[in-house]
Length: 96
Image 1: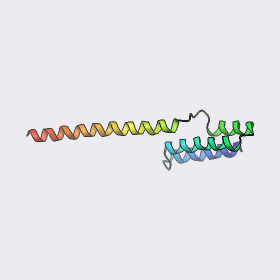
Image 2 (image 1 turned 180 degrees about the vertical axis):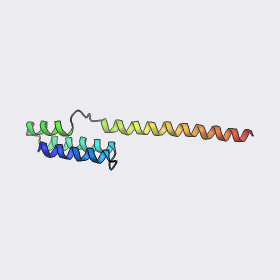
Image 3 (image 1 turned 90 degrees about the horizontal axis):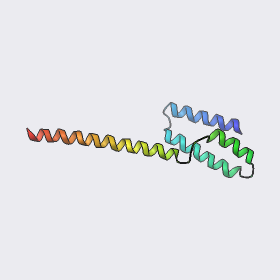
Image 4 (image 1 turned 60 degrees about the vertical axis):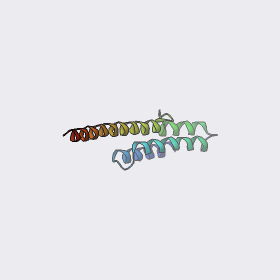
C-alpha cells in the first residue's frame, strides 16, 4: 500500500510541475488523502503510519490554506499597485 501511495504522490507532483493542477490542489489532495487513510486504517497503526509518512510527510493541516492566502495577498497587492498607477495617470491627465 505504501508503494501505491508513493506512486500516487509522484503522479500528483508531476501534474503540479506541468501546471495541470495548482499547488493548492496538490496540497489539498495530499492532506485529504491523509485524513482518509487515518479513518480507513484506524485499527492498523503500522499501515496508517506508513501511508501517512509517504503521502502527508511533514505537511501541516493548514499548508494548502497558507498557499491560498499567500496568493490572495499577492493579488491584492498587485491590484492596489495597479490602482495607484491608474489613479496617478488619471490625475496627471486631468492636470493638463
